[in-house]
Image: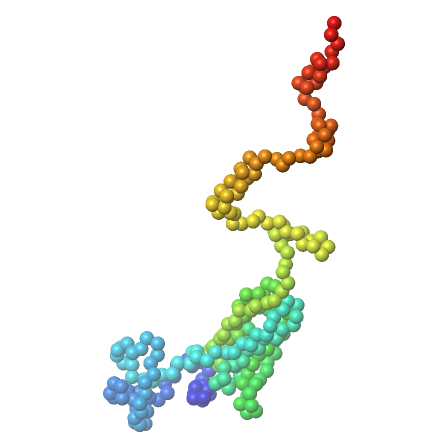
Length: 240
């Protein structure tokens, strides 16, 4: 609240301003410009550094500590979505600019929230999510008096159906999906040795016994080799 009051008194181009306090008379003893003493301890980043001639109390107005609140609903491909960005709770300046970056919206409209007389600004962005919006960074930036800004960033998560890529080697036939993909990782060395041993044992194992009908059928269907043909001819050749 105090910062908002100071902002209302300062020109829009100011980023640092003296608020009327100093410790020029005695280091560490703070006085208002009218001589009234007060206790104050609030160091900027990197301070105190024991440098000289730092006797004035300044307020840095180039950025805000409060962040805007981005509200993201569940996002589904093709379904209209509205994402809102609210000005920080302590900022009541209705003239703040709200800027979206990260995606191209379909529409942006201003809004407000809070009780009457204490309304706060908000921005509502409308868009239709697409698969490429998944994992996209969306940033909402609040700008006061054209120079003081604060922002928040979210990563969008978009729900969408699986997409079959041409490089996946998958084919769709009616209601069936067929995919060919090399398996991996392969079997371990110990497992591969066990598979080779099982194959060797199976190769040495004798075939199961055959029935008489199978033997007759095998004999009938088997083609005789050349030696058998010659022997049969010799046996059937008449003697002189």
